[in-house]
Length: 144
Image (cartoon, rainbow, N blue to C red; front, top):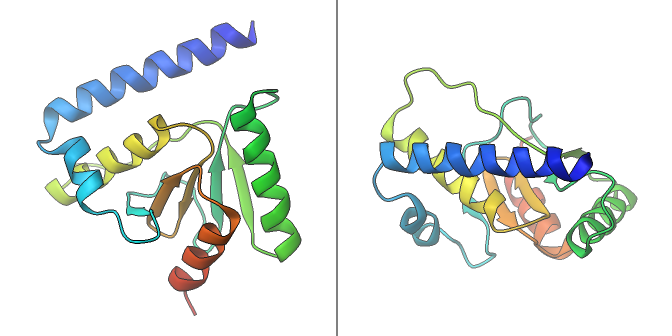
């Protein structure tokens, strides 16, 4: 039953991405163009993600290598004292998005599609970063 749920989620995300990419030109190329030296790209933060909290997206209760990397990352960040929110999906609540927002959403979806763990911090995102990369971006983007 879990595999069907994951399959449905993946199919929905793929369909949503396909629909969204046809609405806004430059989707995948834009994500690569904005990658910084640390590997993180500017993204539209998923709705409900608190500022100064690391969002880690990965399949729940899964024995896969990707899910295990996510769990290890969450443990390491928690041990350091960095706030972490774990999830397995995301959404956006944007009315009449600007071209910039559409491009940022495309980059968010691309990060998520690259595989777990997908990590989002204060407007930046990356697939499968190291703990040191996450800590560096968290510290450089943290407010106040």
